[in-house]
Length: 484
Image 1 (cartoon, rainbow, N blue to C red):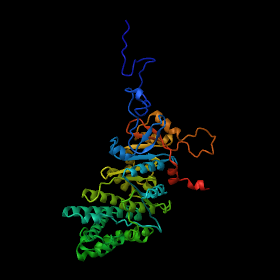
Image 2: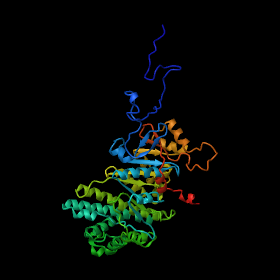
Image 3: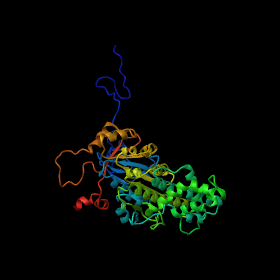
Image 4: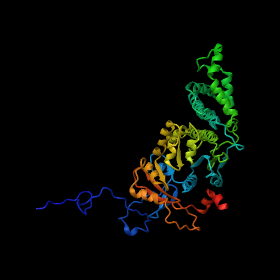
């Protein structure tokens, strides 16, 4: 008597049986209760939540796909942190996608922050929203890297001595981080531990003697304190007696020379002096346009990014502290880091600034969008310690949005998020023209606006974004070609 065949969880085993190792997710559709009432109760859940910015339509079901990192984290609780990594080949719609998120979040009361618009891609949109656009660069506005913004205002409302001491320590730490990066850019390598200690003491000396409403210190004030050598600064060295002043001067000679080169060198016009255009978060959106800096001047680009980040992040933390004290309503922010590869390669120390940001975005009430061309940008840094930190940027982002990419690039992405064979074919098809017969009347590139939204190991959501005419006008990066 032949043995009785029993079905497995995949069906009957054997030739022509139903046993398979992988089953692709079925296509799901969304409809209103009026449209699908005849299917009830056999309808299934929608493929994507209707929470977030309306990015576009599902490429196969034509259903509306909604997503932005803040809504999916705060309201839908679908992701563990409010961050998204967006990458594709150039001109495939990365910035357009983020501008759509910006518009939606601004309408929800979130303040978008672009603290270094390099092209610019967002200045026109922020201006149209009635936000603040600052142009920073040679011959334009300047931001003092030691400007901590409204922190002095916070101090005036704090009465507890321990809280005052803590806030002043935060101000010193914020100023120290900015000066360290600028000094590293000027010198070409990091400062020694002894120099960092002396620099911290000088900044603490300046901060403790500030009065509310007075002008904030500048880099030359730090140099003056180091040269005057007060007892508080000398005490952190081995030469704190008056008779050992010459030893102190010899020990701090390299540090003072570096600060002098920073003040009077190529970066002096951008980092020395009071802020000429104050950043304010009491606006619809904020854009710091640094497109006036030449793309080849990487050192000045890095210095400007450091100062704008220091000022912007200081404003964000001060706003949260004011809300904690009951002096202002709670705020949420959406930070956009576009052209990230330029920021990473701008100089040593930039990776540390971005690394700190990616780890603190959730606790600071800030969603983040990182935009770049390739994961290879993270491996092209000159210092091995910077490369090791940069590898974690994409891995820590809760969502990956993948546009048209090469096969090699998808291999790198697969090491962060697994991709099925169908997903790889889909993304690769976006970078391949259907034929060599071009239509001159068709102004849409193959694959432009197509993205695959990946969350963990879940199947990706293929979405197509079609910008409106107003969005095209406010974000046209091909305007020089059209003008010609």
